[in-house]
Every structure is written in C-alpha cells, then in structure tokens.
Image 1 (tube, rainbow, N blue to C red):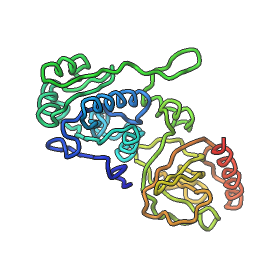
Image 2: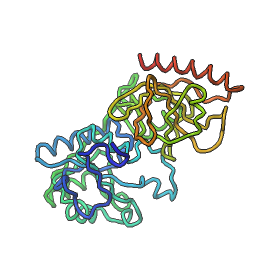
Image 3: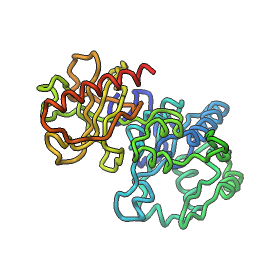
Image 4: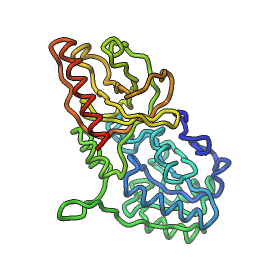
Length: 321
C-alpha cells in the first residue's frame, strides 16, 4: 500500500477528463465523506449494491479541498480522513475507486444543471448516483437530492437517496455528523469517535526519522507527521499500527513532547509492542483505541521513563479489553 492508493486494485483519479479505465460508466456515491462514518457507509453501501446490480464499477465522487476550506479561504476543517485514509476506508467498503475533483472558483460557480450535464453525464458517463438526504451541490447549493433524481430521469441514470442514519444514544437516536466525531477527537475521546464513525479513527502516513531520543530511553518510536489540520487532543493513546498487512499493538504520544522539546509541529510517535523491524520510509496505518492521559512535562527523563512504562501497561490492558 502506498500513500496514494490503498491497494493495487483501488483506482484513485484526480480531476480526470473522463472516467478512467476500470471505472467506466460508474455508479457514483457523491459527497465529501470525511471520516467515512456510519451515515457515509450507508450511502456507499447502497451505491455498491446498485453497481453490482447494474454490473458497473462503483466509485466515490468527492472534492478537494473541503468546500468549507475553500469558502473560508484558509484550511480550517479538521480533516478526519485526508485522501490516503479516505481511500483506504472506501476500499474496505467495496468501492472500486475514488474520483477527486478540485473544489475551486469554477466548481463553486457551476450551476447544478451544468454539473449534472457536463460532469456526471458528458465527462463521467455515470450509470447511477447515490446521495444522502441532505446532499446539496452546484452554485449556491442549488442542487438538492430531488433535483438530482429529476435530472437522472431526464438524462437516463438511476438515483437513490439515502435517509438519515442515526446512532444509538441513551434515551434517543442521534444523527451522525462528521463534526460530532471531530469534537470527540478534540477532547481525546477516541472511543466515542469510534462509536460515531462505526470504526476506530485512524491515520495513514510515512514513518520519518526523528531525534531518536526514544531509542535512547528504551522506547524506540515510529514517527508520523499527521495532516496539518489535525486537532486531536495532545496526549497518550493505546493504538494499533498496521504495516505490510500485519497489525501490532502499541502506545502513542501525539503532541510536542514538552519534557524534551516543547516546540515544532505536533508529531505522532508510536512505540510498537513486540516489534524489532525497520519501519523508516514505510507507510503505516495507526488506529486509535483508547485514551490514557494528557501530555505532561516531567521533571527530568527519569520521571518521564517511569510514566512511559506505566503508559505501556495501561495501553496493553486497553488493547486486551
């Protein structure tokens, strides 16, 4: 697996002039799908089912940057699943590929009817489209699900609209939104985020060289830079790290390492249990299983190492549970 695509079979197409080989006449699930939560999975599942029935490939049609970032003129959204992680999550749901269109001034000014005619029909030649009940598109969000259904009748492609999906919550059903999961992660509640998403929140990145201080302390770590938009609470987590198809338990720190540096961009540092191989340069997936504690500044390295040993045992217990 590379950072660009989750597998050799999954097709990632960036702003293609036409549907790429392997995604001809696709059924498309359209949306941002940040986090690929349970509501998104319902839309994607219906698209996969339609595609299998029509004997067509299934693709997700999505946009970069996030439209909110475009309209605010700066990166402001905590991206739960940047493109590499989103592709991996989609492939696991049975999607054949992802088509990424640029969300720029031209896209924002494109009327809904022109989006359908020029992009969905002429350019991608779709066989069907599946969207959520609250999906809107086109200039000034002029295209609604009902508009798309009517356009499908006129242009000859199927449309399926998926109702709201809710998660079980004490006393009442709870609508699932990406922002709710973002808020949970910002307070470090990875268990709540997993409940909302329907899967543990995970990141994908390349292992880079660090200061190697962890090695000197007896805790060699795999260091991964996360997307700059990440607002995960700084602290210590029980995690699972997957590399080359094999999953290992571990304990991770995300933050600025206040005892030793307290500067620079936040970094994810993963101590992998019972592993002695070389991870430098490899692309890894890190899933967040449980919260252990907030990031702290200790009075020296001895106190830090003692706490790290306690963190390690707490992580093992969380992973075992």
